[in-house]
Image (cartoon, rainbow, N blue to C red):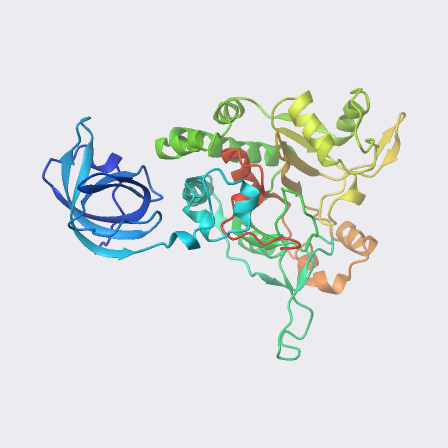
Length: 446
């Protein structure tokens, strides 16, 4: 048995429909022109282009209003220009949008629209963004399955701070001691996913919501976001970067090849030329140590001076990928102290110029216009080394007993990365703020 829900019809859909065909459709009125005997209406849906509806004033007596909802029956006819249009025969449903309730205006800034959370969805820009988003999600899931990963459904409730950074939302219940221990909204599904990856001996991925109580007000931060997290068995750092690059390039190629998506990207003024270049170009790779030296020798004046042993700032990340390499760039083998406890520890770097530094197999993918897009690593699979890292960060080993046990019970070397899917949408659509690619953004100070 099969069942397909009927979608509204667009202008493109009826161009080959025979004249005289009766159709039923629906949408919102996006534009109104007043003629002597009829209303000339444009009917909008989020799927494609606006359809033209010719409504005789004997059928719709009162002047329609913009953004009103309408369902109708009509006959396909031909306009003087040769295009198809629909002549209204019957109104099946009509709900007026009172103009005094309309708060959005043409050309209104994204910042102002952000404060009109529901009405901004009437704007074509957001309709196109929210159309592309699920298409990209579907493709990413299909791609993950195609290359051999099993999807894992993670809990959103966790009992440990995966990243060790303390940026967690605590869960409080009216029922005392509901969980018998402290519970949080997850900042990453990695701990649970590693358990599944290890026990199933399978490449896996999670595509779910993560939460960060980071009090940042930048255009790159929201407090909840869609998080794509692959975890791969027996993977080296180089192989991990290979997989990461393949997935990102595949996503770029996909949106350029799908005409319905491509047309919307052109409307959104997406950097489609850059997406094409990046999908055809090998991403740059540079070690953290070499990146610091490159920044120090650049002659560029940064607000925060780059220093060996300290994390890269947004200005450093963007300079590397936008000015120096001019393409997506991997930076790998960061100082251990600025990365998470679970990253595999490398032999210490002994540099005549800089000194001695403990580094780990952590890697970030930097994207022009964004900075960090993905963060990942191979995982520390040596029990004693992992336990020492947990203690060194001031974390309680009891909170990580099960995670630690994976290293003693037939443990498997693994590696993975986390991709902030909303930031990827910023890159693909050319959107300047992450809050404009999320239908209902939640962020600090909202």
